Image (cartoon, rainbow, N blue to C red):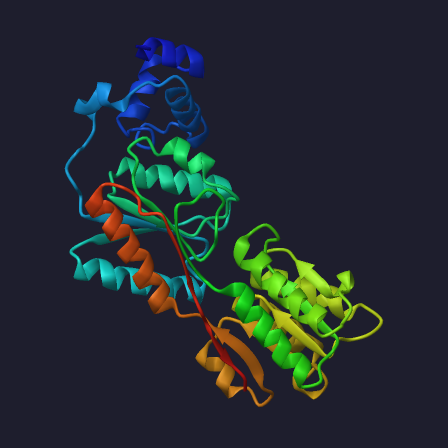
Amino acid sequence: MISINEIARKAGVSKTTVSLVMNNKAREQRISPATEAKVMAAVRKYGYSPNQFARGFRLKRTRTVGFIVGDVKNRFFSLLEESIEADARERGFNVIVASSNDKPDRELEALSGLFSKSVDGVIIVSSLQDTRTHETLNNRSVPLVYIDRMVKGARAQVASDNTWAAHELTTSLIQRGYKDIAYIGGVAHVSSNSERLKGFVRALKENGLAITEERIFQHDFTGESGYRSAQALFSQNTRPAAIFTAGLTLLEGLLRYYQEQGQHFGRDIRLATFDDHPFLDFFSSRIDSVAQDCAAMGKEAFALLARSMENGKLEKKTILIKPKLIIR
């Protein structure tokens, strides 16, 4: 059986570092997520069993779960948090919320911090493309449920049916005579964006409309990104008949650009957006939207996590929840 000294040598760290990582004290002792991941990679590769150091683990339940979001200021994530916390309270759990700002290093740091607090489970909105790094850090096999964004390799996931909703909203625009439609999206590899773009493109193809790369913008889900995309779009020779934004923050950036330019979008350009907000009802020029069912998403995610924590085994399941189209 491989020893702790050999694991330390394989990982290129000290025996003390290995011990701290194995006892969930990496964050407390300011060991970087990269070093922690390197240690856990060696542990998994060479079959070093955490049970050898069971005395160092807090085996009792803490009745605490973690929730990692991309941006706590984003209304959509706030609604998800509200739903998750409500269900957690009903079941006697507390929720620790952490924000990654959609940065992979911050996400890993947040996850490592939650593990160091011995949470019983984690619900995560991930900015990563797969689960490998998460699994490397997860030396206690804490159940992880992914929400909003599909991640390659994830066993438990809950999300909106983004492709269906984007397809239906785009089709609705086309049927009302809007043929030249621009798309302002978020991070290209993030599933919530790529799935919405997929639905958008499918609707154009089904209606025999050209896919014009100049009309598609993908950066991130911030208001600043929406603003920059609007600048680039309106610098083109012709204006689109309609604009589809993949998130409310992107719409906010687009509207800010409109305001600064002294323009009125409703006169010649129709707007549609993923996500909904009560303020959209107060515009004299109508803005169509997709209302995601945050309550249902949060409820399903926590129920999936609760069953996994209770059974001691992560339940393999993917749940897609249909949003509601609001045509104003």
